[in-house]
Image 1 (tube, helix red, strand yellow):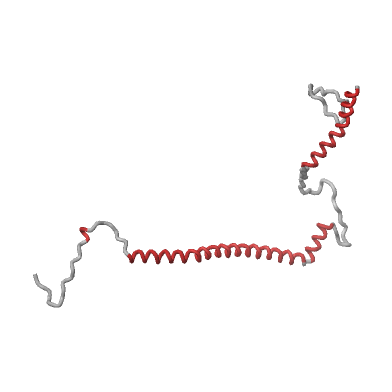
Image 2 (cartoon, one colour):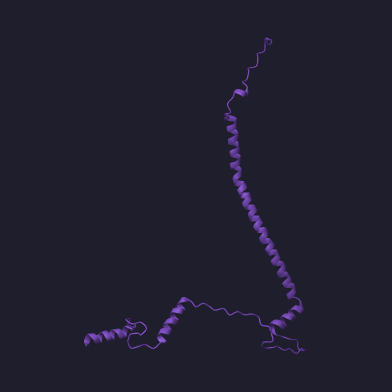
Amino acid sequence: MTEPPQGRRPAPRRPSSVGRSPKTQFTGRAALVAIVLCGIALSLAYPVREYISQRKQVDQLEAQNTQIQAKRKQLQRESRQLHEPAYIEQQARDRLHMCLPTQVCYEIIGDAAPRKSTKVRAVAMPWYAKVWSSVQEANSQPQSTGQRSASHPGHAKAVPRSHASRHRNRRTHA
């Protein structure tokens, strides 16, 4: 074996990885990298969330703007149409049944003209109107003289309070 020159030391021998266990070591450098990455992630979380919510709001406003522009174009078309004399004449004839002084106009009344389908919708009566109508119906029916009803044997017919008190008074005085 040759010896190294006098001023130099031999390099220490490193153990080979063949004999090492598969255990991973958590070094200070790895911990520092993990802390820095967590700090970056936490510092970016709020701005990213705000960016996403603002993009969503911008998209909604753009869709609303598109709808408004379409409505505006439609209203401009209607406005141009309302300033045309021919359209005004047509609307006067159709809606107001007007005609020019030189014309003779006829309006057909009856089944010859096509009817627009108009559905009559039954309006639901509110609960208090139903109660009041049942009270009025009960008042309009003739009252019996206190005889038992044939449809409900064993049940006496309801008698107004003033009549009942008279009957009771008669019983007590008789």
